Image 1 (cartoon, helix red, strand yellow):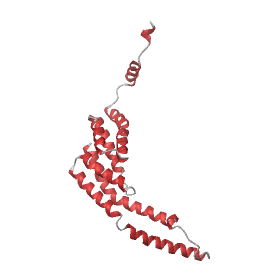
Image 2 (image 1 turned 90 degrees about the vertical axis):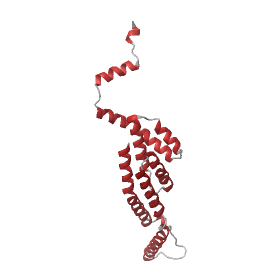
Image 3 (image 1 turned 30 degrees about the horizontal axis):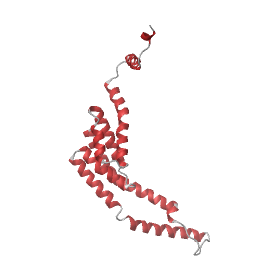
Image 4 (image 1 turned 60 degrees about the horizontal axis):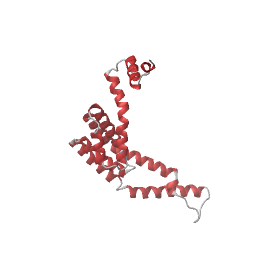
Length: 194
């Protein structure tokens, strides 16, 4: 008689699901998005950490239907977020994968523009950096002389100054702003195709 009273976990889950009622289509999609988007984010992170593109494609191919679209879209969004001028190697890796996953000629065009921008951003930088370093050095030297601190033993690290740190933040913002329109175009493509 006790055997009849013991229910399996599956039966208990079914009873609870019946009590809750059926989910609307929107609720179902939202729940799927919450459940499977992290899978796509994880796949993108693994790829950006060095997993070959072939393995990323294979992992994406295992997800079919609506779930596949969710995982693919989340992966693409995370790869697009990975396009950061502060980490050129990672950015170029992300840019390499995105057009292959989107399989859209426009994605290849945007990727080529992104690569060109990333490669051009660093070309004039050494000259600008040297000029800025000299300017900061002169500014700090003046400040030290005003405080009657001078001599051959007085030295400072330009890279440790707040002026230099602010300069680096400005450069990072400028580079990100240059890339932003292309990244937004790529996001639109990802949403349209997934």
